[in-house]
Length: 111
DNA sequence: CGAGTGACCGCAA
DNA sequence: ATTGCGGCCACTC
Image (cartoon, rainbow, N blue to C red):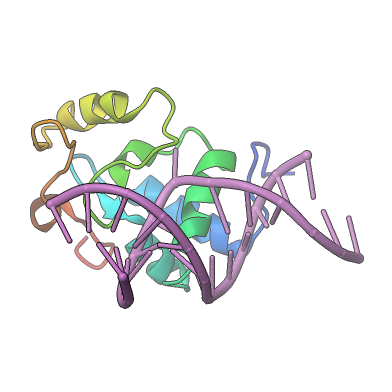
């Protein structure tokens, strides 16, 4: 049907996908926040699962963990994601690949 | 249909 | 400061 790609039929997953897709350039969101906005602040892990099985076209590189850094699992490694974030003018910490959430954390209410 | 799993989060030694 | 453990919920095979 319309959900051609691995769309994760769950409603929760679709909301997560929508939020990630709406993350603007140069901004990031945390798994916990996305999960909370999707309806379950405790389902942060599910967000990661959706990222793995969900639509690969979404800017998952703009999604970071509570520490403001990319977690494992990203295709290529944190170096790849770090590069993608830097490509969006996002400043990362030296080698920890940690970004300033207070500066880049975005929320749909801010839009 | 059932069980396992995970791109997390928070807390405890 | 670091390391380890459990819990929690939805998705996939």
